[in-house]
Image 1 (tube, rainbow, N blue to C red):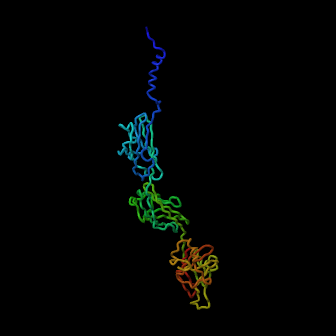
Image 2 (cartoon, rainbow, N blue to C red):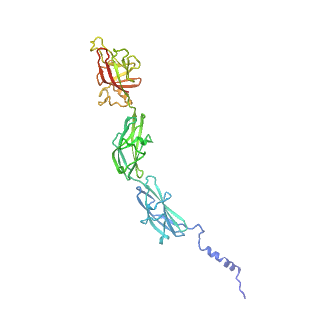
Image 3 (cartoon, helix red, strand yellow):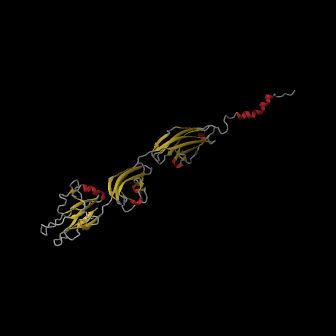
Length: 407
């Protein structure tokens, strides 16, 4: 008598291969468990630029053995020259995982930090398994360091002329890094390199910023930086910025006012009792003219006919045509003890000198002497006069004064 399997038994046998196959794994393709990675050291590190720091981490496999470790810096693979795994310089990045570490590992990685300071850099430690699943840990690294210092023995606020090479004495002390360059700005704009001179007043630098030589990388003392002022009167803020190899900086600021240099001429003022058309002086040109001519700013006071001919020239002068005239005498009325005619350099100083002038007692000067200094104002313009020669002529009344005039 034949035996027959019942229908439920036949169905079970028919689908048995599929049933047992489906019981082999709980995961669908592409849903394998990834590795688990844990950071065992700090996630925030502060170092000096290019300092080596150490990160400790552990990893365990998920559904697949561990395969490799890669280190990134802000998303870019770190060069092997900056890595050591477990104290051994890296031969590759990523580095393969071998031996029993494929099931789980506890490692260290030594990393040479970034050279730039300031903004934190993110380092990523990524672990990959045989199925290319990855997990990462992250470390924020901030590089800090001692910046250089920059000082000066020169005044930081002063006045000078236009188109003048001014020397700034600089002393630099390095911080954490070698000194690299100096940049100079004028009112926040880079100065043309042709207007900058380092150490030698005759040789301009090639670039701005300009690179320091090897002899200056460890610092320097009282070296000259020459800056040519513009051919323009005004106020200029110069900044000198010293930078080291890590981008750390030191800065000095100089507040410089450029004045207009005085012009100079010589003029001769003749006795007003002499030849016709004389007795006045045009201080703009140095030309002798009639004392009532509108061009004349000063005039000679002529002669006293009650005196003998050899004594009758008054040898006094006075302002003409609505001018004002005063003495300038060192140490008097607020004028500096060291004041000299030769020391007058800038037009902008003349109004202040006029304020320090001494009024004439009765509208005319005392008897004029060699080296007397006068200041004249007319319609907001100023002239300073120094007497350099006096000539006496008893015969023709062609007596005269010769002045050097600055205006």
